Length: 435
Image (cartoon, rainbow, N blue to C red; front, side, top):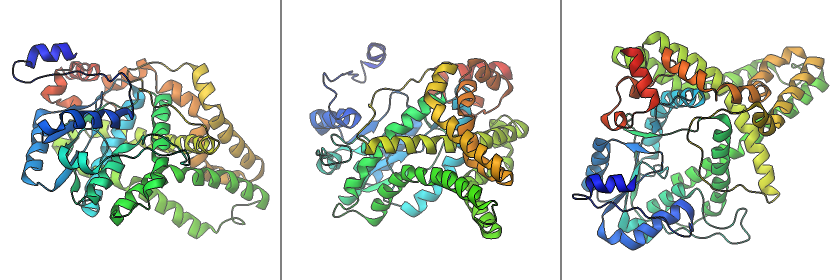
């Protein structure tokens, strides 16, 4: 690939591919190595992952915004999923497309110049990055020692501490990434993030940080530390209801129902806003394949989300327990290509999840069956995790979804020229159905 790029653009733009013999510091080490060796030759650097795609217009806009505001240290673009023929990825990134824009617009408003940095599809100002964003190596007393794995948000708060702004541009449609094609790969990626985020403990008390920056680090921790609370609610709540003999003896129905509704509103509010926006704009509806296909996708994604969330909660809970016992995961590359998940692999990876769902629902079935509908919101996903992993990895299901337009994204309806040049199977298959 680098040879092809050099052959095409070498006369106007130097293209260099480098692979460090020792990958010290992982991705953050790659960026630091570039900045130290060649940073003085450049004012800005565009950070990309191996699965990143940005349009030329999007890159130029990031550069122009940085040029206009010399106090802007990091500018993050809003990243959305690329069209995929994986059923799992299609459903997940359809929901991501529903929620991320409204969520990011809101967070950009209140976070202001203490915005997020996700480590890719963003532009950084090299000089202050080199001067102020050097990451420490955590010593043996740390929960997870060594190099900072989830480096991006730490670099963002260090940049803000130095007086430079960190902002996100909440506009979608020009900055893309691939999402994991299967549930197994999605869990694997999330556990790497969980491990990396646990290192943020050591930065919460760092002198000079803005309070919003401290909140961002704490929120990144709570994204995973809240998971054991949900699993505890299922396990201990089920035991308490079973011992009490009725749900009313355990929790008052009126405030309990109100809290339940409040949680659902908090979960789904960003997506509901986008659904209303799409349904009230004809051009947007058509870009998603039409109103009927769009609403069918919303229903499927809602069921999928309610199943996926507790699966991830239990995965985080198991992993955090292993971290406390001194076990960790590696930081290797992820599988990005579509592939099937055999039943045997799904069973090996997800049998604890199935056991959790079956045991809690079985206990309630024997004692207080009326509580089962409420418990299903947490226990249902783990109970069905094995068939969910196998079915959503089916290439046949993914291709069928593309053919009928389920989970269609605007990038499939009208792909930017940079994406069209990639000849993605999902884009070509969707184009064939429209022809």
